[in-house]
Length: 427
Image (cartoon, rainbow, N blue to C red; front, side, top):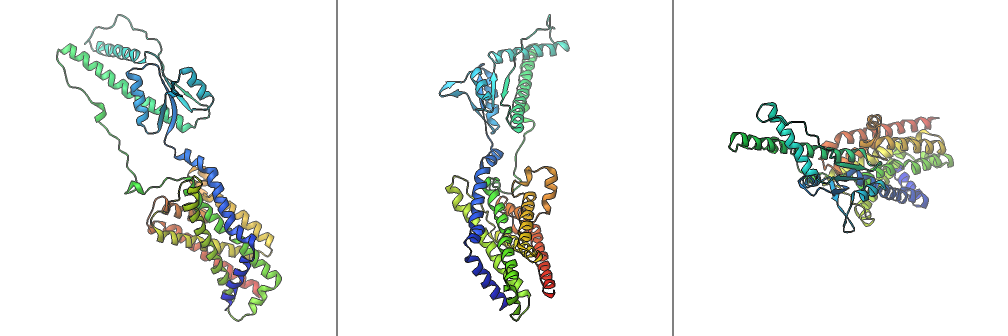
């Protein structure tokens, strides 16, 4: 009787408060949309696999062709050689990079292939001469400097600069090795009078890339939608303490709590009624936010939320987060004596827990000290479970550690709420 009366009373309080309903459903929806739109470009850059750079090949020879093929083969670099149908000059490339229109430019100087091969031939002659297999050149030939320029935008990210530089160095090292061995082999052929075998360095060691998952198609990129929808859903669920604490303390002040206490039955029924009602509200919040990720986000030009296929795990994780959020809100409502104390402490604590829990930004981009603190936040437990389900499509067994911690937190806060509530009744 008490439980049903409590549920009915909480229901009437909520539906008669348009501002409270907006805070429970409309404001979290606006928040997740705004945060996703703001962070979308950041997440795209974080996941972006292609870097547009200018490529000016003044050589038009074998060296420029090899560099172009090697850079494009990385899959991370897209070369641009023309602007409005006209070839980009070295001067124009420098200007475009300086203005930040492009992040980098690679400039191959004229006659680079010819000069490069001349240096290779000279090195091969010196090598054979050192073993007495060829006459030593009369003097050490001097070659004019022939540099390949890479021009960077000063604000380019360090990982982009590193990726481009390493790709260039790797390609040039391999090309020098291949051409040098080929030149030495040709000279040995001339010395021995017969054509010998050829060494294929590229076939000695191969690098293969494999996904840690059994099926690579199961992996979902961490986009702004994939992060923000579950993250801010939990943030909204934990803010259930606002109507819960507000209504609870108001009842104490206007005498409604006293009338409930006069109804026959255990005082636990009042706590159970509130817990059950606001638990349902939290689950409705989660469903609303997931629906926004599935249907509203694509309409705004964002990616669609991927839920994976473990729906039982999603239900279990959602229920665990809702229980933890409701338990925490109930404890705040029971413990503090004034609405100002409860709402101030509750809001600040949730913001702190969400910040260290990876709600504002993913844990993987946090400083090391914050990554160490993150596992102590209940919101991180929930976010980890949702990420495992949505992104990695893991089985339910893999999220049980996070679910267990959330359930334990819910039981702890609910038990503490009951004990505090009973102690206050004796006063």
